Image (tube, rainbow, N blue to C red; front, side, top):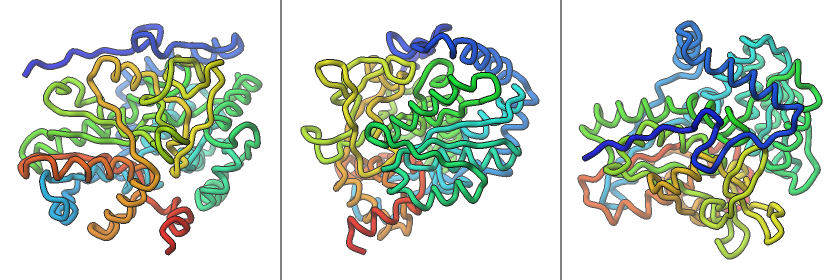
Length: 399
């Protein structure tokens, strides 16, 4: 099978027609300085050594690739393997990127760090690395997400971060991101903005992808060592898209022989409230980048909905838009009720309570496995654990 040749973004941060820098003049220097420093750091052996050491000794990498034998047997068909990002320190993949960016902040002499968060996992990861490196930390979080993710709010505060509630708009991730950008505009010199997903102005989509690509690198090696060959299908949930691009990136050269599927949040259904930007969105600009967005006929951004706070962003990373256009990755969606069913099933068969975000990917695996031959291999990126979602789970499942 011919390998796919894939190289993106270009020098201006464009993934085809997506991405770029749609930013106010006050942020142009910040973005340029960050890009310059990142391009130096990623080829600096000392930076790489420090990051790899922290990923190993602090985060707990490599995370396991686990054969979910009981779930596979229950469903019949393909064998399902889970990439256990839920076992990372702080409970999700977000720490991979937060560590990389905080090391850049230190290189650039920044003392003040800001971040946005939806489900709270990126906020917790940022608060964690700021505590580790003795940096001031401010996390912007929508009031609705604060309500849904109270345990993570408490964790951030315990770690020494200031959590600033955002009451504007939908009071969720979109609005928290907008407030963080405003903060950066007002404090450009002393502040480093740790973006939590593959969204925003260049170089963030590229940089966050590179820090998360450790997921796919490990998975490629592990699946060959443990299962004897490459997988047939690789699945990840997609909100902004960092865990998915982290899993997919090293598999892109084999995208003609390994099926890659990203699963968005269909919420209450694609004709109702949802967060399926790739499935139902149109091209527009949000938070400094061109991407597919949920928007009305006048270009106004619509409210996104998902039972999982980490997936209810009304846009999606520009690289995912580009991969969809190229046909290298297929994007589908899972509803709130389907995700809950998958979470419940995984818990009862494997003793693993995953995050509601990850449950969207698990449901798609449960749907596909019975249709595939027994010798087939499915890998699911289990992006986070479900501790943070227990309030929602208890309410929805009447526990």
